[in-house]
Every structure is written in structure tokens, then in C-alpha cells.
Amino acid sequence: MKKRFSLFLALTLVAILLAGCSSSPPIPSENHPLVGSWVWDSNTTLVYVFERSGEGTRSADAVQGEAFTWTTNEDGLLSITIEDEGTEEWDYAVDGRVLILTSEHYNVERTYIRIYVEPEPQNGPLVGTWAWDGNPEWTYVFEANGQGVRGTEENPEPFEWWTTDDSGVLMHLGLRVDRWTYTVSGDILTITSRQEAGLAYTFIRAS
View 1: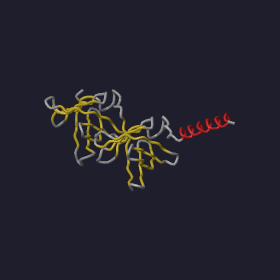
View 2: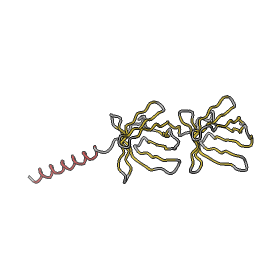
View 3: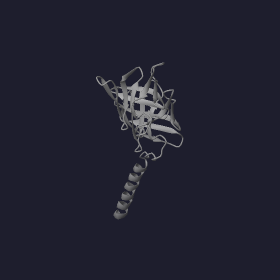
């Protein structure tokens, strides 16, 4: 009788442990459409990064972001859990390069654009040195490793850069992120600010 009770108790404990394991949030699939980096299509540079591991970060204006874990369900619900702060729930929809997050609780809808975190290939249109047509000594240098520098030799300003899927280029300078739309036509680069209306510059390829 004691053996039967011990066996029953052992099986019960195993069942409880298995139930606990099954309740753990599932890891998103490797090809989940949310995996990657997204920037808010607004003047505020709010960036979400969703990792394949189910972890992620979000940050605003290049300030160190907050970490979270994330899961989704078949109904298009995204759950973001931040330690000691609780869980946010968003309806999400991904259409190619565009992510739309909607929250009834916060009564907001936000559109995000996919970021290419890795810089463009070495033959990408931005890689190289560009001289401002207003002053050839003032240049932009975009390196293939995602590093760059702008300004003059006497006053250089280093930055990190990456592109978005809608012809955008983001430049991380200290605690500031500059956002531009770029077009390359032959040896001519034109950048137009996404943060200040009417601000645009033209550059000529120097190398």
C-alpha cells in the first residue's frame, strides 16, 4: 500500500512539473514576421527589436532601451512583458516592410518601418565618400561596416548608420538620431530630413 501511494505521489509530482513546463511561453518561430528591427514612422525615433529567442528591446532617440520578452498568438495579439512593469498587449499586423501596432488600452495606432540593421552590401549606393555641393570640404563617409563620419577634417563627427526599407537612412550621433530620406542618381546623393520640413542637401560622390 505504501509503495502504491509513493508511486502515485511521484506520478502526481511529474504531472505537475510537466504542466508547469507546458505553460511557459513559446519561443517565436525563426521566420516569424516580427523578428527584426522596426522604427516608428514619426518624429520620435522609437525603435523595437524583436529577437528570435523571444527577447527584445525598445529605445527612444538612441537612449539605452528597456528589455522585454514577447509572444504572439494566432489572433494577431502581441504580448510584451517588461520585468517589474507587467505585460502590454497590442494587436499587430505586418505587411511587408510595415508593422502596425494597435492598442485599445492606450487608444493608439502606430506604424513602424523595418530597419536593415546590417548596413547595405559593400556595393550599396550609400557606401563611399560624398562631398557637399555647397562646400566640398564638408563630406559624408559611409563605411560598409555601418560606421561613418561627417563634417570637415578639422571637425569630424562620427556616427553609426543603418537604412530602412523605405529609402530611409538613420544616423546615430551620440544621444541623437538623425533621420533622412535618401536618393542616389548616378554620382549625386540627395538627403531630405524627416524631422525638419524643407531641409535637404545634395552631395557629389568623391570616392
